[in-house]
Image (cartoon, rainbow, N blue to C red; front, side, top):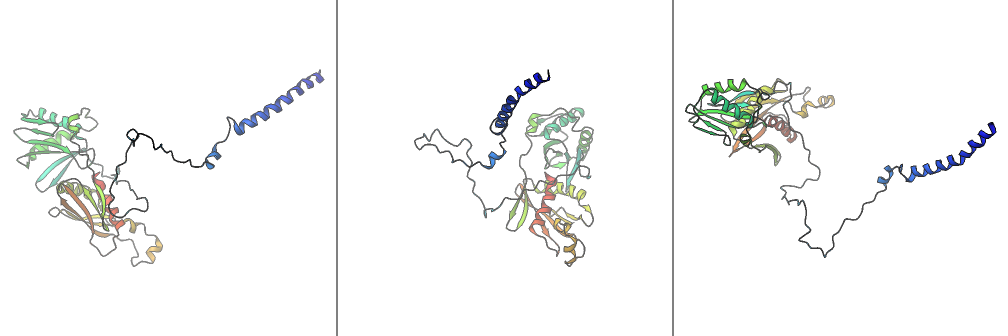
Length: 327
């Protein structure tokens, strides 16, 4: 019996050898071929060329790229694109749903919701007060009553709105107080209704940081009074760390701020640099943040008001931080 079993087992040996050879071939050139090395041996193919006899009216660029005239010197390397400075949650700078802004005798509300969300709340306010509506236009963001004129527009920060209550160009304090109470009693999450027409009030323009000669500046597509009020609000919140960043003085008449600021270059000095420098400790310096009206735009500049060095990189770093309040 054992001999018979041995003979049957030996019959399978040639078949097993043949299968092993076949599978090893598949591993090299069949389904199991490793293609990783193929990419290292790949060579570029010549570009496709259309025949000269083609009809040029039928063959054109599907996505033509416009020719843009470059200004200034051509860049030899990739530009460094830095992300916008955002307001960190938990830093005490996250906005309330309703906040006030003030410049001179003008006061208005900033609501942390888009215009399409705020507009139905303004209509509800008028109905709850049983005010006679003489004119109402969601596309223009205006409700006119005998008592006051309520105006809505997008705020400087994305996703926020500004609400004014005026008569004859003057702020109506009682109306603004009532509006603030009405809007504060609601939140962006509780407001499920939205006006599609009022959403078109949103301004799509954005600020830009540009370099003029050796100086950096921020171009803000908003009037100077609105920009000053917004920066004044957030500088008071953010620049409140003595020795690091501190708001020293404000001048609404000239639209300027004086701050004490430690630049990133100074913060990153290592112990060896400190030992071989005149300053044995890290120091802040005074910088003047100046706003200049330029038609419907505002130019923000950071001007060194101390004897310490203030490089172009330091200037851009500070401007990016401050302009981040408006994004």
